[in-house]
Amino acid sequence: MRGVKSCGMLLAASDSAHENVELLVPPEGSVPGDRVWFGNEDDLEQLPEPAPPNKVQKKKMWESVQPLLKTDASGVSMLKDEHLMMRTSSGLVTSKSLRNANIS
Image (cartoon, rainbow, N blue to C red; front, side, top):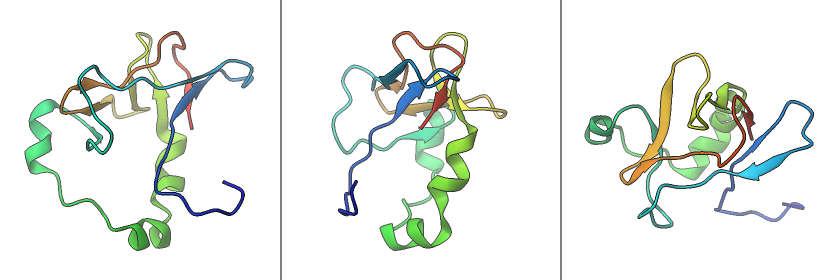
């Protein structure tokens, strides 16, 4: 923010008018630094190593994924057209009240 490099990220859901915004909620039992992925619980063991920060910046990974993020009709965060749910090893990442919302 404001040109200051950060290693943290907050994800929020918002309605189409961006009038209602709320932070996504990690599952109970998750801790800072938990890995977040899209898919099933069993997919964790098959994931590649996380990309190092310099590769994330060079490949513009966030910019390519962010437009595909949304919440579904029950508030679960997911990849829009793939129906892959956002999760940690503790469970699903959700929005308390925003349904079918954009995530940024």
